[in-house]
Image (cartoon, rainbow, N blue to C red):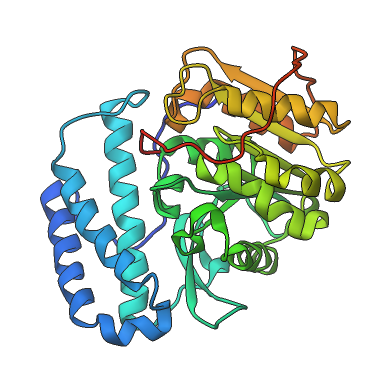
Length: 345
C-alpha cells in the first residue's frame, strides 16, 4: 500500500480557540505562565517535583518561539507556523489541566490533544501527547504507535508537526507520545511509556496485533532500552536517527529474536552520524533478526527532512512489510555511547 503524506493542516481538537493572532497566543502563554509559576508549589506534588518547572519553561519558550522569524529546513512557513501553534496549544492545555486539577481523559481526545495519566510508579500525573485520526471508530480496532521523543525535545514538540497528523490520518493509526519526565534515554521512566501504552489500550479500541514502539533521535536509542522490558507488548520497533549501543546488544538479541525492526537514517545527519543506524541495521541482520533499513539521501537530523523514508517505513511497519537491508557490512562495531547532539531535534 502506497502512502502519500502532505504537509497539510488538520483541525486540532485541543481546547476552545484562544485567538487567531500570534499576539493573542503569546498573551495566553505569558498569562498562563504567570499563573502557573505563582502556584507551582501546589502543582509540584501532583506533577512530580523533578519536572514541574519544565512545564513553566515550555510556556515561556513557546511565547519566545513565536517571535522567531527563521523556518527550519524541510518546513514551509505555513507548516512551521502550524507546528509552533500546535505546540503552544498542547503546552497550554497541559498547564491548564495542572492548574485546574481537571485532567482530560485520553478517551475523549479526537485529533491532537494532551492527556495526563497517573503514574504506576509514584502516583504523579504524567503528560502524554495523543493524535486520534478522524477515521477512528470503536467498532474497528486501530493500530497504535507509541513514539519516544528526542532531546532536547518534548512530547508536544514531537507530535505537533502536521506531518505526524498526516501519517496518522493516512494509516488510521493512533499515536501517543509520553514525556518520560525528560529523563535521558528514558532510563528511570520506562514505566511511564508502558503506562501510556496501557492508557491507550484502555481508552481506545486497539488492534493487539499492531502495537508499535517508535523513537526518534534520543528516542531512537531509547527503543532498545524500553522494548526489551516487555517485548511481547510490541509488534515491531522503529528506530529513527538513533541506534543500538553495544551495552544493549545481547539483551535485545536474547529478548527480541523474532521482532521486526525498522531503522531509518539521513545521509547528512550532523548529530547522529549515519553510521550509527547503519551499523545497527547490520548488527540486527547478522544476528538473524528481521530488519528493514531506510536511508534518505541528504536527510538531516530534523525528522521532517526524513519524511520520504518515514512515510515508506511507517506504512511498511503498519502493514507487516519487511525489507532486507540492501548492503552487507563487515568489520563494523556498535557504538558504546550516544554522540553529543549538535542539532536540536
